[in-house]
Length: 259
Image (cartoon, rainbow, N blue to C red; front, side, top):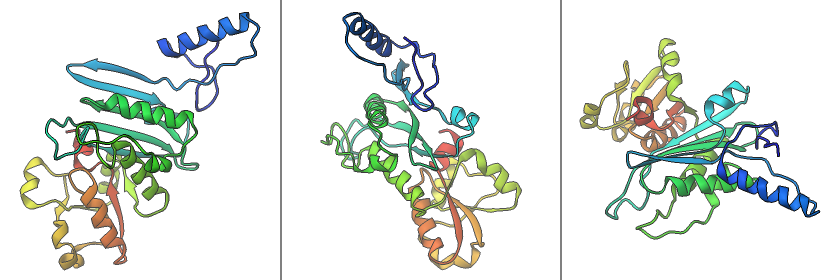
């Protein structure tokens, strides 16, 4: 049976055991005279390497761009469970969204225990037709050893919702260089001691706690970043309400530097 891509419906090469087994069952159903049909495939897959998990479902950003899609992208770097509970393992998640419809185009994740769970949840959401913003309202199992009250999947939804509703404007890591070449101001809102981890070339440091007192140093158009994106989001809200056009670097310095 021909596999069809979940986004376009076009024939797709997806050599995975899950869809193959499902199609084998459908063939048996047809032989038995049942009226059945195959569903589209997401290409959900996972691999373990050096004690880490790497998983994906749906389209990558590269594929979406090549297809001419208008997209939004969200990066987060959460732990697999509540931060105050010992033994947390870090993960890195990326959500690719159709900017025109808020549809989930795909997701990728890499990290420790729990990456599989999050990608499977997103794959199920895609199959059910949920939008990226609706991930915010998923009610997922929670206890400190297993997850957070705001699960990483919920966090992806919160960010997707904020971007969709115009609460924040974001910029991707690969867009920074072009903006810097235009002379756009880049502001690092971390504390001075954190700058030992590195800074984006040409950026100036205005810690978020000093932002209101140093508002005159902020130009009319600027880009903000912190370590992972939370503080730059808060800073962007402060500055946008003071009449500045600001963009928050999605995923923060961690995503830009790949650390």
